[in-house]
Image 1 (cartoon, rainbow, N blue to C red):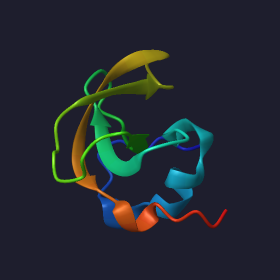
Image 2 (image 1 turned 90 degrees about the horizontal axis):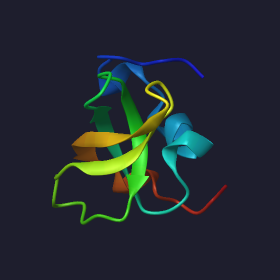
Image 3 (image 1 turned 45 degrees about the horizontal axis):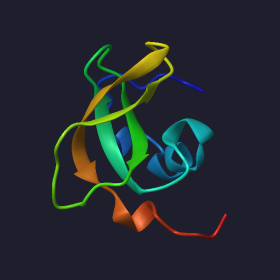
Image 4 (image 1 turned 180 degrees about the vertical axis):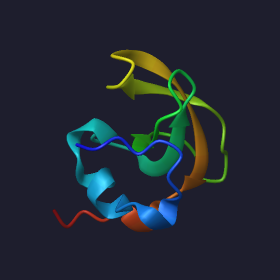
Length: 82
């Protein structure tokens, strides 16, 4: 898994990130930034996609649960075809 700090969403494979176990297993995918280390990753959370408020999720770079600031909701990546 490669770290994608400060990379624009266009330079990342968001679909692949959403499929990784580190993204989480339930909820809507969000492109989000860890407030601890600045890493930008796709994370899933049970949150209204219109409500871009911070949420807690595990950061594998920080090795703990941290706050994530969502940049945008990615509901198109929420397909069940795995």
